[in-house]
Amino acid sequence: MPTPLTRTRSRIIPLGPDRHVYTDSSLLHGIPPMYKTGAQLSLENFVQGTSHTLIQPVQGKLGQASGGSPHDGKPRLLLMGLRRSGKSSIASVVFHKMPPNETLFLESTTRIQKDSVHSFMDFQVWDFPGQLEYLEPSFDLEDIFGSLGALVWVIDAQDDYLDSVARLNRTILTVQQYYPNINIEVFIHKVDGLSEEYRTDTFQDIVQRISDELSDAGYENAPVHYYLTSIYDYSVFEAFSKVIQKLIPNLSTLENLINTLANNCGFEKTYLFDVLSKIYIASDTRPVDMACYEMCSDYIDVIVDISELYSWDHPDRKPKGDQMQEAESHVILQDETMIHLMEMNKYLCLVSVIPNPEAKEKKGLIDMNCRLFQDALNEVFARSWEEEEKDSST
Ligand SMILES: Nc1nc2c(ncn2[C@@H]2O[C@H](COP(=O)(O)OP(=O)(O)OP(=O)(O)O)[C@@H](O)[C@H]2O)c(=O)[nH]1
Image (cartoon, rainbow, N blue to C red):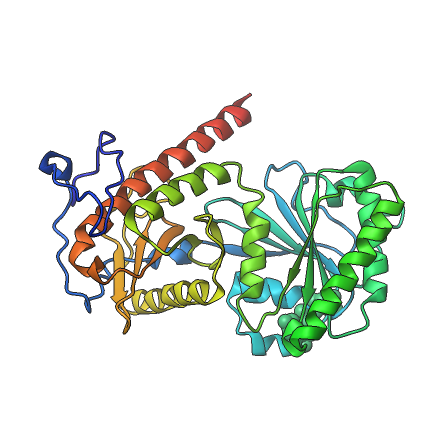
């Protein structure tokens, strides 16, 4: 069992030929030897705990939003839009790992479908039937929109979208009156079937129609955000990542920590992923490169698959507190780029793309810096848990 890292080691050690290379051996105390060849994947114990990341479907009655009490403290994501716009497909692909082609066989949703997602942060996803008239007086708006994290509105961009936009506008105007802080996330969806030019035109047209309506009603700065999405590529994961990130109270702290790590170690891009959904909850603040995101996301799949076959349940895998430290893996690509993955806790892993050909010689240093990040991450989360516990006890 490796000795836990102590808090005195709070310094990220720069990596790279022109950077100061760390030499103070006293700081290395407690780090297990980690000498592996470039081709060797270190798969010890990685991610078998993901099966504990439960997704529990709960059926609610049509029109009744009870069952996940609005006051149970978990942020809620509502998936809304017209019938067949793709809401259930998005929920199934992102949270249930359904292959996109299989969504062709999904039946139309007739009841509000509630999923409780237990991960680094517990939240609920409510999939609304397209035909549900939730703005009718018979529905209690507080039940639906109270304690809401975000409203995700899905528009089928391959279809005539005017009805959908009109209904969305009505919904935004209602929600803005009573719950002005709710984030409205508009997924302009199924863009896989559209040409680049048509995609851009559709995007601009939809944004224009919604902004015009809102400014006519006096809402100039309503929190509405737009994404082009499809279940047939990674865009829906990217969009969901952005939606979830807005619900994380410590996002800027996490981003600062990742920036420090990535800048000092010469990482091209670093993502903090939720292993099961492959949503990234934070990354460094460099622009997102889709190819890089796809590569990291695919690498998680590879590791999860291999771990499911050859790994075993580890009692030290837990959501918070001191973490096990040996769960890491890396691979060197043909162009000598390294993809490095390290488990952060039961739910999260850090994946970095390192274009430096010397990275394989400095693997120990990279591991150590990632573990320092792991310690810092634990402290950030420990603080929010303490606050949560305080809140619930008062
Ligand atoms: N081309 C394409 N088709 C999609 C995409 N997402 C979903 N679909 C298809 O759209 C159809 C409807 O998807 P659903 O997820 O059932 O739609 P829904 O909004 O949940 O529908 P209701 O339950 O009736 O409200 C299915 O045949 C999906 O395969 C996408 O990104 N691209």
